[in-house]
Image 1 (tube, one colour):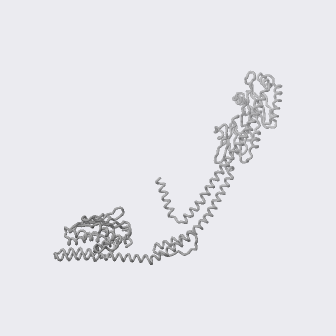
Image 2 (cartoon, rainbow, N blue to C red):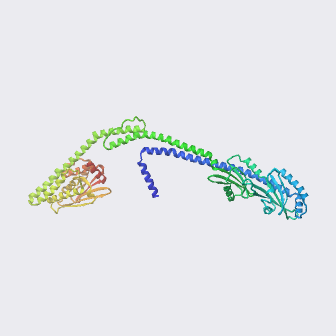
Image 3 (cartoon, rainbow, N blue to C red):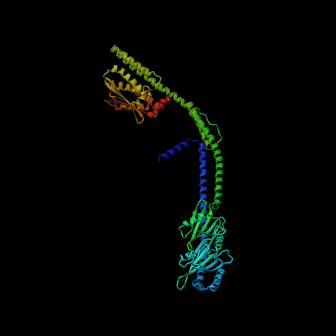
Length: 607
């Protein structure tokens, strides 16, 4: 299952990668050829089945009719043997022959009766009376070339004739013997029957009737009109009569293998279709055969026409598909080229192709869109970008006086009280702060921002006292690599120091930076005096509406807090969230949440 899915995915990837003209041609070929091929195959199969069924039905009727006629002849000739056995002179003749008494006059009288039977039945070729050792009399049809005289005892011995007759228990037996001659196949059909004394039921002699095989040929010629069809009568592994060309070896093998004694059995090979019907009365078979190429000659013509039709359809549809694809691809290619130019910053329209269809409408809308984009870029978008950049710079520069005022106040306080070398440390820390503040880069790694704040707190400790101001930083290693706007956290720390911890006299500031749920979370928390609920609500409303605070809430740090919120919205929009929580007497917590994707996008846009 996995392997099949992989193959399908590779095919799908290949399909998506090919051009539209190839897809269009492939779709055209599929839509045309699949129906043509299916219709052709179904037509060929249905026609083949109909012809085959029609042939089987026709040949079944033919050989069934032939069997009925042959069975009628069999019954008729079997009755003639019965009529012969009813002649009393026959038994007197055989009795005298058995006693070696002169029976010449009896033979002459009896042969006259047999002659009348032959003259009345032209299907009889010869009639003979035999014992186990000798012939008694034979009457031939003079119009025939050969009779019983020619085959008994030359080809068929007296003993063999007796064995053939005696196996039937007094009933007539039909027997076929190939007597040879000029033709390779020269069958002789003989009806043999034992003659038993009516009083003692003891064997006295053998009655043999040689049948004229032309009666079978006449039956076949009347029933079979198709020249390509062959029909044969088979008995005792000998072809009694054959009309047409037939593969005798294969047919004989099939006839010996059948087990159905009643119905027609059909065999189909790549060359012939053979039907076999047993004649169970004499254990013979009627066989019909027709070459497959003759039977399906019309189907071959149909197949040829289908191939020609498929080829013509291929040529016509290919030409039409190429013309249509060229008509479609020209405007599509123009649109693709124009979109590539738009992607590279070149906003140009597409030349009018004088089309009124959907593609023409698409080109018209594309040109209208490009014109509007040009207007927006030239008149609105660039103006807004310039205004936003100016506002960001103004907000950043607004922080510098507040920051420098507090630092200089700390240096002045230290100089007045101590006049010691600690001033050097403060100056070094101040230089670091000024270095960061004066950088032209808009974004700094969070790690540098936290170092900047640590330097800032080290300076403030001089003012507050080492033991009165603590700073704790906890940051994910992953968070430290993100670049954020410069001086984004410092105003929050400054606000915590001067409005939360200084009124209390001492305190601790915690800064946490973490990444979870694809968001950077920055937390600034102090344990100062906190903010009462009423004032906290006014501060939240002021930050949300971006208006100036009231006079009692206005200070450098309050302005810095508002600037942080404005910068977040200008740079990150709705992908950044600012929140402030406070509990009077316990402290204040400020939380900034920025989408990681927005952080990366803003930094890339600033490059």
